Length: 172
Image 1 (cartoon, helix red, strand yellow):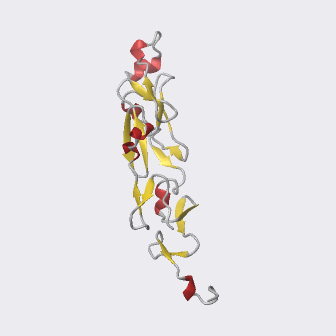
Image 2 (cartoon, one colour; image 1 turned 180 degrees about the horizontal axis):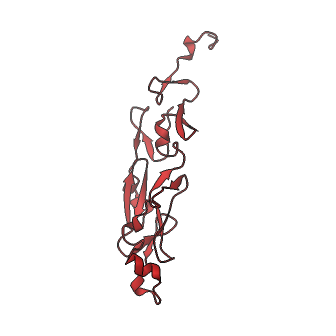
Image 3 (cartoon, one colour; image 1 turned 30 degrees about the vertical axis):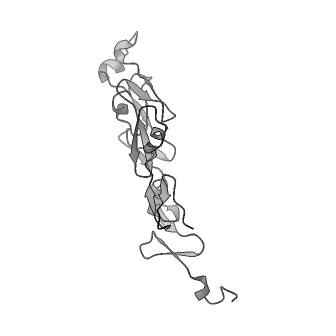
């Protein structure tokens, strides 16, 4: 029996997986906007709001103009806040220190630009492209198959073995 990674479901053919649009079900649990991505989704907040660390809840974002004592970061950043395009962050944005600071969901690391989130483990996203088992080796994905299957020539798909054709495997 074939299984799919989180964010995917088994197609009718019983062998391949397809992306699930998590946003179709209760808006993905997002309090504002849900954006479907390949194998996952992310929540986005409307103008004047910022995404909380839970990755789903949006709350009003204090702008520099409404703070009692705007700091230098506010004056330098203009009105930069998490409420505008999530501060430019892929996953989480925190602007409590006066300027947007990005962070990532578990399994991801912050890219060099300080805003994009990249998979820390290539197997985290889309199971590394593997049909069955993904192993991380030196930062790269290596596919293997579950018992009773063998790796196909494409090095990502698994083909069912006919164990009865292997001498000494079957008793009858």
